[in-house]
Amino acid sequence: MARIPLVIDSNEPEDIPERLRGLGVDFEVRKIAPGDYVLGPVGIERKTLADFFNSLVRKRLFEQVGRLREAYPQPLVILEGDLAEISAFRHPQSLLGALLALETTERVPVLTTADKDQTALLLSVLWKRQDKAAAEYGLRHKPKEMTLEQRQRFLVEGFPNVGETLARSLLEHFGSVRSVLNASEEDLKKVAKIGEVKAAEIVRLATARYEGEQRRIDGDEDGTQGL
Image 1: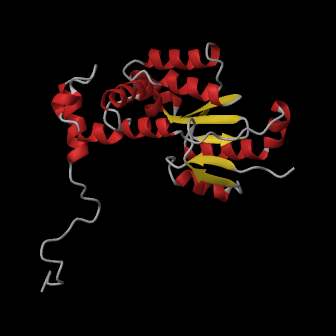
Image 2: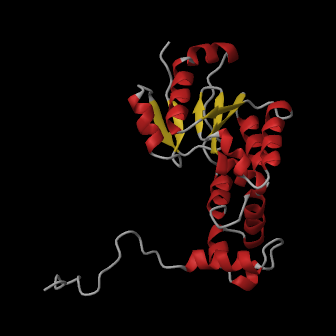
């Protein structure tokens, strides 16, 4: 039977699809949640070592893996990076403990790759053997599109140090994404676990002028620059 495309979340680095294209993988890029890649019944979360550690510190790791497990018959985590660097983290034992918990308690396999090249290679192998995976599960799983509520939380989670739980609290308190964006520091501090620092960071990010890569050069609008 014809192979189905590998679905890639639109937030994934563009160079990974480029590598997959070179490996002959048929894929499509769109917004999906949860997960970074989906192929039939398999939902995949890709994390670099730094991402993995940060998610663990912010207590978001097991929430993310839990949603992945609920959404797909076969959840899978790809841990990307040199495992020898684990000892460089402040609490390497916590990172190793989380890996052990994923494998033994959560029953979610963790596959390790050295870099993006190996990640793309692993994904290509998964795509090429999808016939076996589909036969094993007897189904073809359709990736979940983000609901309105998930999209709202996703937007608010873009603020510094705001995870899913805090994003939910902000939205429940203010009622909409727009109201969160328009909130003052004093209003934000009324939400549990939003202190002075987080409130200031949110307001700064929401109100800062976007400069972009090409900043306006004074005197260049009328073509007089350099004359």
